[in-house]
Image 1 (cartoon, rainbow, N blue to C red):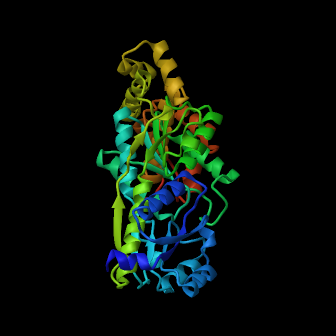
Image 2 (cartoon, rainbow, N blue to C red):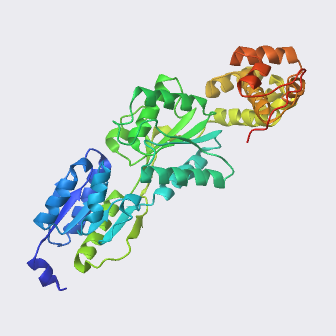
Image 3 (cartoon, helix red, strand yellow):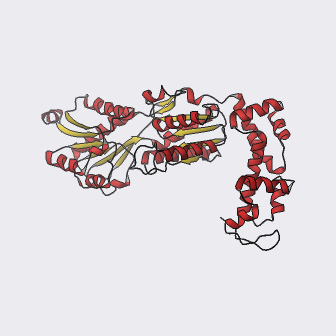
Length: 417
C-alpha cells in the first residue's frame, strides 16, 4: 500500500489508558510519537479502563473503528469476552492474557519485560550489600504484570542462593485500591517479621509509598533497616516521600510507540495470525534516598545474624556472638538493637524457640532431646520460655496440633510434610 493511499483515508483508533498515573501518560506520549511520524489517525481516548465496556466495543464496531489500543482489559469478564468476539485489530499493552486466549482476530501484546524488571531490582540490592531478607510486595494477586515481576524477583534471589518472601494483598482484584485497614495491618506485620536489614521491592510506586508510610509509623528505619524500591519512577510520588523513593524506570514511551506501530501493521494486513509478543527493556533505575548502600553497622549485624543461624542451637551465648562481630559488647548491643530492633539475647532465644517448634512438628523426639538439640541446657528454663511465648506447654502444643501421645516423654505421632 502506498503512502498516498494511506493519506487518503485516516484510520480511527480507540486508545484506552489509565491516565491517573505517570505510566499511562507516558504510554500515551509514546502513541502520539508514532502518530507524529505522519501516520493519519483519528485518536479517540478513554481515560479509564472501566470505560471500555461491551456496549462501548459494540459502538466501536458500529462506528467502524479500525483498531484498539488498551493497557487493561477492563474490570469485567464480559469486557474480555467482548474483546474476544470483536474482529477489530487489537494491540494490548500487557503480556499475553489468558482472558484473550480464544481471540482469533489480529492481536499483538506489547509490554515491558516484567520478569527482567523484577530481576533488576535484586541486582540493585546486591550492589548495596548483603541483606538478611529479600521481599517483594504485590498489590493484587492475579495481575499479570505484578505476578511476572514477582517471579523475576524470586528467581534472581534464588539464583544467588537465597529465598525471597512475597506479600500478596488480601484484597480481591476488583476491590477498592489496596489501602484497606486489613491490607495495611497484614503488610505491617509482614514487614515487621522480615529479618533486618531487609531489601523490599514493590510492584509499583504507589505500593512502595504505602511501605514507606508503614515503616515510618512502625519506627522501622529506611534505608538502614529496610531499603525500598518501586517501579514506574512516578516523580510526583517518588520525590515527595520521606525519604525520596528509588524506582525502576520502564520505557513506557517505547511501549506506547511499539503498541501503535504494531497496531498499524495489523490494520493494514488484517490477516488473522497467532498473536505475538513484543517486549521492551527498562530505561534504568533512578536511585534516591530509600536505597542507600548498607552502613558498616548493618553489615556488622548481618555478620551476627549469620553466626546465630549457624551456632545458636550449639549453645552459643551472647559473648560468642559479640566475639564473632569483632567489636566491644556495648557497641555490639547498640548496633544490633538499632538495626534489628531486638537484643542479641532475644535473637538467640527466638532462633532456638523456632527450632523447638520445628522439631515438635517434624519429629517424635522426647522433650529432653529437643531441649538439648536446640541449645537449651536447662529444660525447666525452656519449658518456662515456651509457655510464656505460646501460652501452653510443649506437650499441650503437640496435642493441640493433633499429636497422639503415650505415657512418658516419648510421644508417637505422624511426621508432617
